[in-house]
Image (tube, rainbow, N blue to C red):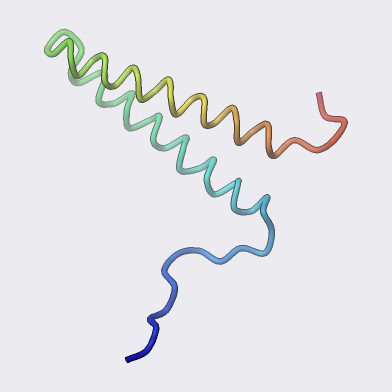
Length: 74
């Protein structure tokens, strides 16, 4: 038996990894917004879930953007 190939992307720099993460986080927000538009007025529990997830993903995006800033950036 051998070790299988590693699954996933291979990046040369941490910034490339963070950029990919930013893409995934942004698409997650879009999906949760779509969920919210579907369940609005139909299910309070799902609305609260979607809003909570949007908030969490937006915080993740802000954290990744902060990590991507260079020294001296405002």
